[in-house]
Length: 186
Image 1: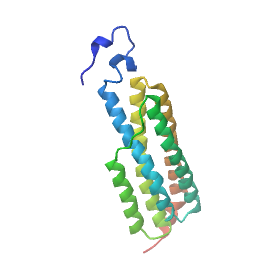
Image 2 (image 1 turned 180 degrees about the horizontal axis):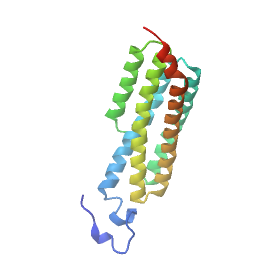
Image 3 (image 1 turned 180 degrees about the vertical axis):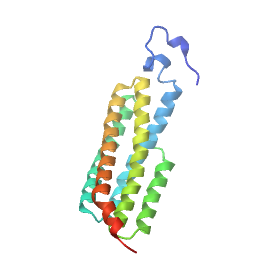
Image 4 (image 1 turned 90 degrees about the vertical axis):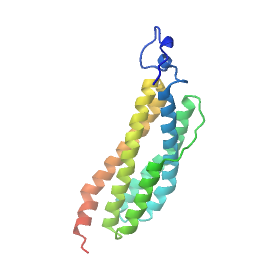
């Protein structure tokens, strides 16, 4: 990575002025990853309702529906992240998330309806959540390094929502769904 050292005189490390945000390779990576996540959120808004149709547990339906509502608002939050540094929101297909969504569909098809399918759905959604947690955490760190304070704050909010959703899914899995699935026999 080439640094523009002649622009650093008298400036604090870790802020966008240090390396020139517009020229920074980190800024390019940040934008590309953000484009992926914009696609991810839009794809999940379409995929989650299909998943919901396969859930048996009312408690799980409530958690997934709440997260769908959050996901719909996260589309707008990602748009605001783009706006915070003067860019138009553009989505770039995320192959990783496309694969995770496809895996969720296959798990639902191959699982018996009831607690087993609910357990499979939780497993699939948690993989999706973990991908989002990892990526939003990285994006938040990039934004902080680039001195994009508003973007970092928005990304922190999204990251918290993703972590909360993951925690709620774990609670339901441990308290009811996995126990019920264990008692199902072939």
